[in-house]
Every structure is written in C-alpha cells, then in structure tokens.
Length: 399
Ligand SMILES: NC(=O)c1ccc[n+]([C@@H]2O[C@H](COP(=O)([O-])OP(=O)(O)OC[C@H]3O[C@@H](n4cnc5c(N)ncnc54)[C@H](OP(=O)(O)O)[C@@H]3O)[C@@H](O)[C@H]2O)c1
Image (cartoon, rainbow, N blue to C red; front, side, top):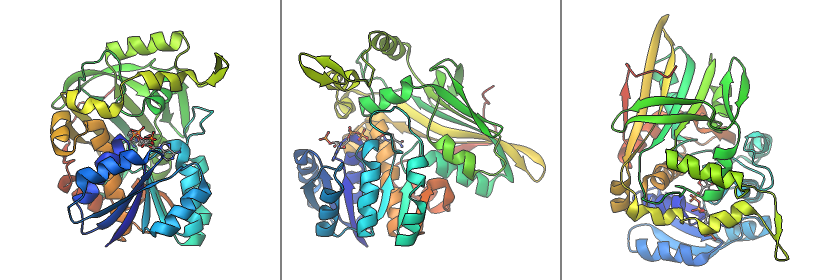
C-alpha cells in the first residue's frame, strides 16, 4: 500500500512500529525519525527482516525546514506524529508544505503553558481542506479509542447520547513508589492541572483531584477514580448530538497521589524556569530526568488496564445504558512487543488511525477528530490488532 514516516521513538512509537510491521499490506515501508537516532536504529535492528522495509533518520521536529527536507527526501504517504504534543504544529506545518496526510495522538500544548486544547489545531481546518490533505487528531486510546467507542455507540445503539463517563483504570504495579506510565512531563502537567467536566453546554472547572468515586471495573475490581480534564471531552461535546454531560475519570493509587502532592508542595512539578548554579532549569524537566524512564517499566509491570466509556441516552424513546471497554494485560503486552500496556494501548490505535487514512477509509481533506469518521472499520481493527473490546448493556453507573 504505502509508506509512513513515524516521528518519535519513545514508548508509544515503539509499539506503533511493531504494529505497522504486523500490518505489512498497508505499511510496506516505514521511516522512523526522531531527535535521538540511536533509538530509531535500535527499533530497526529489532524489527528488520520482516515484510515491512524500515529506514531511520535524525530530525528535530521543532524545526519546520528540517521536517520538510525529511518529508521531501523520504516521500511518505502519511506522517504519524508520536513525538510530544509540543511538536504538533510544526509537524502539521511541514505536512501542509509537502501535502502529506497527518495523524497524532495528543493535542497541541504550548511548552510554557500547561493547557491543552484543540483550538490551535482546529485552526488548520481550512488550510488542510484547501491542500486536499487529511489531519486525524488524537488517535491513541484516550483520546482516540474513546472517541471511536462514542461514534460506535451513537451509530448502533442510541438516537441521542445524553451522558458519557470515560473511565481510564490502570491496575498495573511496577514496584516503584512513584513513576509515570508515559512521558513524565506530559503526564504530570495533565494530572496537576484543574479538573473539568462538561455539563449543559459548558465546561465546569474543579480543583485538581477534588472529585473522587469508587468504581467496580470488570476484571480489575473496585478502584478509586478521580475526575480530570481530558482533551477528548472538548471534541465529543461538539460531535455527539444531544450530549448533556461528559466526565473523564482516572485511577490513581494512594502512593502516587502522596508522592505527587509532596513534589508539588516543594515546587518540583512547576514549569516556571528557575536559576540553578547559573543555569535556567525547569523543575518538572529536572524531575523527569530523575524518574524512571516509562520504557523501562515494561518488564516490571504486572496487572491490567481497563479503559472504556459508559453511555446513557435514549433509543426509540426508551432509556439505554451501554458500556464498552478494553482490558489489556501489562505482561502480555510486554511478551508481544516489549512494552507495558499504557504504551501498547496508545501505539495500537495510532497505527490503526494511520492505516484508516492510508487505505482511504478515513480520508477526507480537512482536520478531524476520530469520532467524525465511521467507527466500524476501526472497531474491527482493534479486535484484530490486540485491543479486543467487550460490551454490556447493564453497567454499574457513576453517580
Ligand atoms: N492518546 C493517548 O491515549 C496517549 C497516551 C499516552 C501518550 N500519548 C502521547 O503519545 C506521545 C508519545 O508519548 P511517549 O510516552 O512515547 O513519549 P516518550 O517516550 O517521551 O517519547 C517521545 C519521543 O519523541 C521524541 N522527541 C521529543 N521531542 C522531539 C523533537 N523536538 N524532535 C524529534 N523528536 C522528538 C523523543 O526523542 P528523545 O528520545 O530524543 O527524547 C522520544 O523519542 C505524546 O504526545 C503523548 O502525549 C497519547
């Protein structure tokens, strides 16, 4: 079918590369390009020899000219952005200049403001439409599969969805008192920000971690879940008709929260630069340097994740509840691709999103969120590529 340029070579990219190699009919060729080329080469060494041809390159994805030069040299059919949210706009600019389709897993965040929202990327709609190319935003698990689950519920089971509760539970144990499962800087910026939920046409802000429930998750059992702001709520609020309330919940262990509070209290999670021995350093970036690399958690993490959406609404005038979720086992993921389930649950849908665009199933000039496309081929691909989903019409509800 064609060639993908994958930017980034971290935890998520590593899984996506494995998955592209499991789908060689679509990904005949991939080029892995990142800031540290040695990481791209290590992936190539591990996976070369199969049907997918792999090349590597060094690139600074903050530089549009470097990206444009690389895209012109490699001539990919699509760019899969698995670097950090800070690079979203420069990579979109390079795709525009070279007229190549674009996919990512996380929305743009300015490095100096811990605030993620879609307005910067949605502002590219006209430009992508005019250039005749597709940008698919947020094709990870959450955002990503949660939007596909919402489109699937909307298409098959509801006339109107009134309420969505997204529950992201990680019951994995890596044995460290404190570590983050994906990029520590991005993760800590997300969980220390104010919470928010969508209610009757507007977003209501809450103090960080101030709303807590206990939810009994299939295959995991009862867990403390905390209300967070999360980016897919912004697009679902626009794209799901009749929606009245959306909340996003995530599990955190008491140990994680105690460590985080302590780090916050001493200023280690701040993104304001400070002067240290004549140098400007950002405390959160320094903290990232001393925390375990998420990629190193794979061999030590035991247990499962369960991420899903609980929908409430109406069909043919009758109330309907529907819960669709995926359970993923950290050790099974490690056995298959050498990564824990957090990278796995993001890398698989990243590959699927790129495949949807490359095969033309989700190709439409403009900038789109996943729930704007037909969910059925994506749902099939989840079952085929390692993230099978389950459903029930009698879920426990969250008050
Ligand atoms: N939607 C979801 O469900 C979901 C869940 C988890 C993560 N994510 C997103 O997935 C993305 C990747 O996360 P991750 O855990 O894989 O992060 P990671 O392990 O830190 O990997 C990031 C990669 O990007 C590279 N990179 C950073 N800045 C770059 C630049 N200026 N130029 C070129 N390469 C650069 C890094 O290079 P170095 O190796 O040189 O540092 C690294 O290889 C993030 O955007 C994250 O927010 C989405």
